[in-house]
Amino acid sequence: MSSPRLKVAICGGGVGGLTCAAALSRCHDIQVDIYEAASAFTEIGAGIGVWPRAWKVLCALGLSEDLARVAVVPPDDHPKVAFHFRKGDQPEGVDFHTLVTPGGMLAFHRPDFHSAILRHLSPRCRTHIRKRLVSYHQDPSSSRSAITLQFKDGTTATCDVLIGADGVKSAVRRTFVEELAMVAKANRRPEYARTLRDAAHPKWSGTLAYRATIPANKLRSLLPDHRVLDNPMVYFGKDTQLTVYPIARGTLINFAGLCARYDLEGSTFDQPWVQDLSREELLSDFSQWEPEVQALFKCIDRVNRWAVHTTSPLPSFVSGHVALLGDAAHAMMPYQGAGAGQSIEDAYVLATLLADSRTTRATLDRALHAYDTARRPFAQRVQAASRENGLLYTLNYPGLSFDGPAWTSGPHARADQKKLAEIQSRICRNWAWAWETTIDADLQRALGMLDEPPDQGRTRRVTA
Image (cartoon, rainbow, N blue to C red; front, top):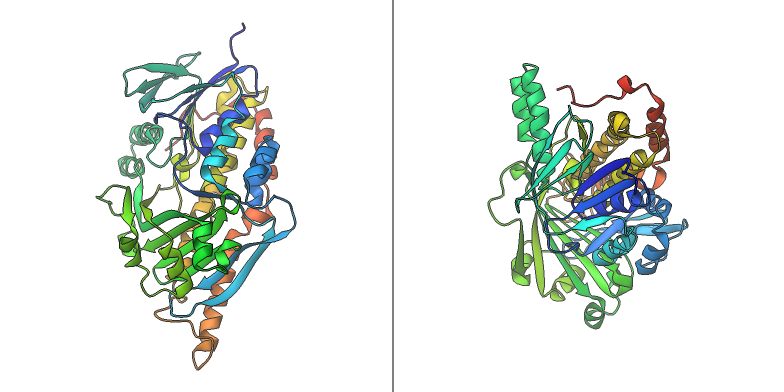
């Protein structure tokens, strides 16, 4: 058997890591190893939303048929309601916008989504569980398998390319950032080196997310005509917000409630990041919300509280022959439902560049530079827009906040309706990329960079 053109190690078996592996494992001359820290390839969480831009990537990877079978609504390009917007933190809520997009948002039960990608891994793709990365070492002087991975169990492995898809707590990112900081220090930029090292670890956003699934039949028996049985909803409130929509072919309702404290953004969260809570502990943050929201709470038995953490923007997603993708590169707020989609886009672009026959061990620098050029600016813009949308969802955006009900009549009605109209307008402008654009132009630009002279694409070390 001939030796592989490339040996690629993927650290992390979530959506981004598996998507990248599924794309790469179709190449007969690339050896792919996935290292997962957990005891099985499983996904934590309930619902996952996919917008048309990311859905087109999944179609290109041959995943559409399997995923369409587990979608709540079969995917197509016809205009569909993505979400209804309603201010719900008052005795009687106020509807103020219906977001209609081509194809709408495709909603999946996360385990169904994860399983569909797993089924598309080639048998040539080698999977390893209980492999928690501690660190890695790059040897730029070596011509073959220059990266050594060190795992918590004492074992090691080697590869030509390491892909860090290991989430917001990424071990790959920690070593990666230290490499960038060492370059900055060598360039006599100690302050910048300290700033980079600070970016190695995630920061608490000041937001807590409460996640649960509700059996649709349980809600139907309590309130047969509840709108979320058929309609995806975003409920807005001061410092609080709910996103609720059907998943698992309509048998479950995905529930995500968020409570924001922007004065605590960037601080350290000194409790467990994920914790089980009772329904009563959740209710205290939503006690003044309208009856239809209270009906949802009555159907929840247990809820997970997640401390939402994000990562600081990096000057590059590439260091030597190591690349970051997904939350390891750009963990973001959940207010555009874009985290999974952006990791899918990262994975697709990176895998396409590595799979191209022009990419060899000798030209890896060029391919990885093309990945960083194509993906980092876009992903970081989405990251920033997701934070801004959070300010809008929780009625904290300067000049557009509410300290009480939104009135539909009376002396304040006109001003309140104008505020709500501006909120939805800003949200939609920030979000339009998800259904109005495709990844095609960025991908073609990146592929074109593979024809550049090698010295134009060199990124053995990022200049810091």
